[in-house]
Length: 168
Image (cartoon, rainbow, N blue to C red; front, side):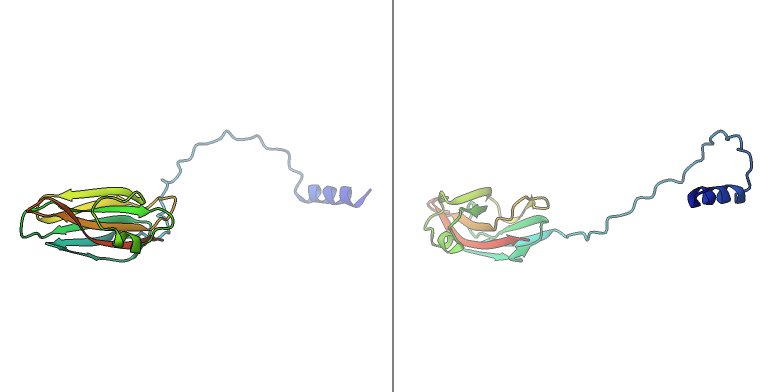
């Protein structure tokens, strides 16, 4: 008898050589309710930029780098005379920089500025806009241009340009 057959025989004998039992019918047991396990990823808070347009001045407060998150832009309009004010949010075509945008002499959109959203407001106060950048496929830097119209002539004036705001 070879060693393998002998080992199998020994195991069989030592296991008690009991006759096979009749299989029991399966029983249905109630399972405990599944418990949801929260994801371990950290939650990213929304990011806020505040653009203030006051008469012929424009400022932007907020980070220059934002995570892939919900971006809120608060446009605070504080004009002494009723006028139309707003901003343009966009990206620049390859080869253009913030310096090109700052040097652009008018409020007319240059062909190398890719507009994402334009905002025009006619009243003073806080105006809030939200952009969802949580699932963007690419990371183009964002740029903002603020403008207002001259209350006497209606002519549009570019007041300032800001950027880049990097998505990381």
